[in-house]
Structures are given as structure tokens and as C-alpha cells.
Image 1 (cartoon, one colour):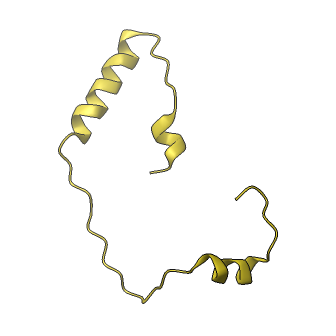
Image 2 (cartoon, rainbow, N blue to C red):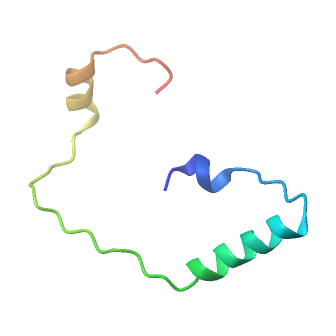
Length: 61
């Protein structure tokens, strides 16, 4: 899930919206995450390798 979705402010304006939120939260409670299995090889890139890939400029990263 995207961070923006998790941090989003919601406004509950009526009882129907409140009930829908409670039902969604109760439905999600206890549901396990799906296990992810890597099917391809991967490796971690160092800072230097990333700089080689994208260049030396630093645009706030």
C-alpha cells in the first residue's frame, strides 16, 4: 500500500460513513499478508553504483 494512502486524512460526515469505515476495518482485521517469493535474482546497489546509473547530480535525494 502506498504511504499516501496510509497517511490520508479522512472526514466522516455521517453515521453511514462511520459504519462503512468500521466495517472495513473489522473486515481487514486479522487478514494475513501474502508471502512474496522472489522468482528472479536481485542485488542491492551501492551509492556509487546508483550515481553511475543516474549521474552525479543531487536533486534533493
